[in-house]
Image (cartoon, rainbow, N blue to C red; front, side, top):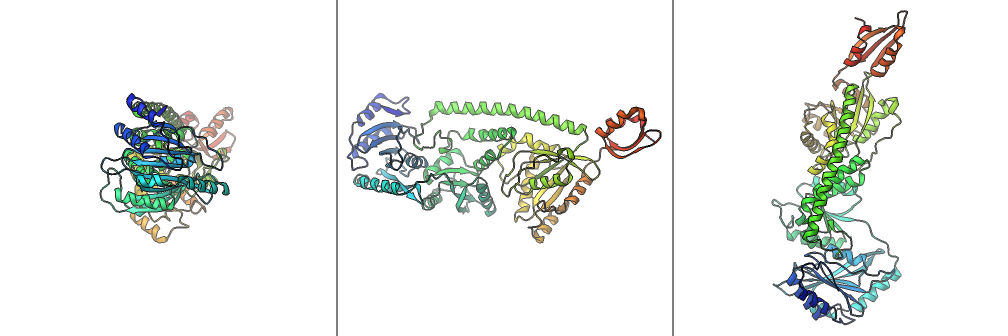
Amino acid sequence: MIYGNIDGVKNSILNKLEEACEIKVPKDCILSQELVDILAQVTKELDREVSASIDRKGNIISMAIGDSSKVELPIIDIREGRLSAVKIVHTHPNGNSRLSVLDMSALIKLKLDCIVAIGISDKEDFKFNIGFCGIKNSILVEEEIGPLKITEVVKYDIVDKVRYIERLMKTNVIVEDDGERAILVGIGSKEDLAELVELARACNVETIDTTLQNRHKIDPALYIGRGKAEEIASVRQELRANLVIFDDELSGSQVRNLEEVLGCKVIDRTTLILEIFARRARTREAKIQVELAQLKYRLPRLAGLGTMLSRTGAGIGTRGPGEKKLEIDKRRIREGIFDLNKELAKIRTTRNIQREKRSRDSVSKVSLVGYTNSGKSTLRNALCDIAALKSVAQKDKVFEADMLFATLDVTTRALLLSDNRVAAVTDTVGFIRKLPHDLVEAFKSTLEEVAYSDLLLHVVDASSDTAELQIEAVDEVLKELNAADKPTILVLNKIDAASQVNIVKIKEKYKDLKTIEISAKYGTNLDELLKEACNSLPYTLKKFSVLIPYSDQAMVAYLHRGSKVDIEKYNEEGTFMSVQGDDEVYNKCKKYILV
């Protein structure tokens, strides 16, 4: 029986493959010329991958037809301490015989005796690449040889090679290798590439090499050009990297083309940031926002993406989706986007209600904004330690760590200012250069807190060599949120680690803004920051004095609940109080106000 994507395939071709299943491959050979001829002929007719699974007796146990880049594998019995006793021979219609990331994944996960890719081309002789399992540091790794000629493949001593591999498997304790080792590729500045290293670290990806290319024009097919891509492919193979990360956004076709040349999984900066957000999201709101951004990013790339959207990790064992499947996936993504937008609309309504309540209560709104890892969460925790209301002092602290995007979940806490006013301080999501637009859109309901703030505390990592670039990146996002004209204090954080030269340089460039130097980690100048924030916040409360008779002590209780009581004295006529309150409080106790 022929497996895989056989819809629309002529019966004559299916019959030809059925007959080919009767071919007997010599036990000591990987393949035969007869088998290659049939696989090549069918591949040319269909322009699709075709594969044959062969056991150690030389019997063809299954045939499968895939799409242009993937093909289905049979179910294979995998035993501990030995290989699966199955060889896979399959074609690559694009003429490139290099084993793809899916091929390598199938080889390791299914412990194949070997996997062979045949590059089918009309212009030159077919090329063959063979993949074997190997062992390095007790980890099962892939070994690739080729390109070879058909005569070299037929003569290859597969029996001896398989025995050698299985001896190694029996004498070594094989550990599953789940770690990701990446090569980072950038075009442009070293600063962006250094930041990409930090993003990879935040996603628990080990960076084993970086490549910076000076290129004026982007290659529409391979982004960095074929020559550079093949150079990176050689380095990747030598260093045994299993991931290549690009510093800029790639199109779906670029990802697919690069995976073919590099032979491993390829992702871009946007995918990495979305992955970090997906891992760090804790609240229901944050998870919805991240999922929405992921779906918006995937939708236009669905047709072009390679392994990123494959249903299984076992490489060529992924069924080709076909046009029908592609349309179904697109519709499901659109439906998912619609449903998530509805949920975010509900959350936005809830936030508006909370915001209106704070406005009624005359609570000043302060937002901490800044570049990721500038110290916003540390500052928020430190401010709560010294100025939190008693009623909220026991609430959990925000998670803080020296990594990019340590916190995603927006929290708001009440602080008591030096003039007895209450301010709601909101810790927002950190910004970054090249922040994906879909992510900004998805987090709009959260970032709206910034737009409605009375004061922004723009937290800057003063110890960073790229502090000025970080400030510019934050300003760009604030413009997008229509919050660039908000009253702002530039908070130069981490002065304990910053050079005085850097601090002076920043203060000179942004001399039009109020600046204050602090260390959130060690509590330096936090009282000064609170005082400066208090002076910068608009004062909306009225100060007045009242004398309330003892017959109306309910009014005293009301003033304690709804206003700031500065002085309270008891005399013969009643309770004297000096208070600060909004218009509603003022009007309610107007008859007791002392002129």
